[in-house]
Image 1 (cartoon, helix red, strand yellow):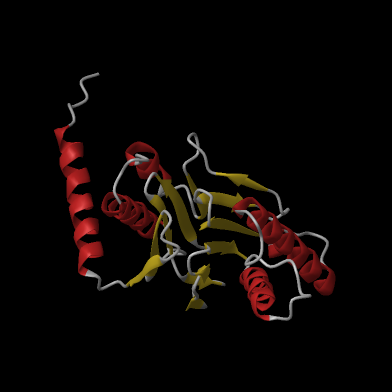
Image 2 (cartoon, helix red, strand yellow):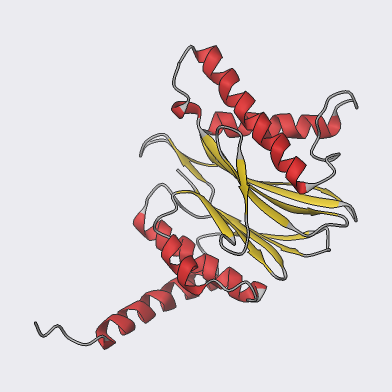
Length: 243
């Protein structure tokens, strides 16, 4: 499984993903799930993936090939005029890859090859955008009512995001919030694990700040320990049941 979150803020975008993939408790590996394409001063595009590893790697390989291959190999996300068109290209590529893999294997169900993706970024002259792409190739855009997207193992880390998210929050607070969300998920589900990949994108910068967070990271461990202590303190401060 996996866990990825893309968050839209007034200041820009924040992305975080874990790196665990597994096919059972005795076959656990680390794979990158966050990928970025950039053209300085023109565009910055980040994609996070969840689902069947062969499917997601196939999609990323196709997108990457189109950025480097001859001009006739289109459509390329590096030439798309808007982030909406970027999301459409990636959605169509995901749908085609699922159908291709399904036809090769001879299976009729697409669930074995299912995948979802979060896409975020900015193209010059436009605001940063954030999308979630479904296996069928359709997608939705983040807005005021849905300012962040989760894919993968979403349920354990969602409550803290819903309660504490603020579109005006600083990048520092957003990172803190994401770390709590990921720590809650990691503690509840063995299929999500460190290291984590973090990316911060400030609006109109066309450049991201990236960091890999390992299990030994002092700030992550401080947040995890203090959040656990804070929950225990809050629990014990609640009034006793008298019914």
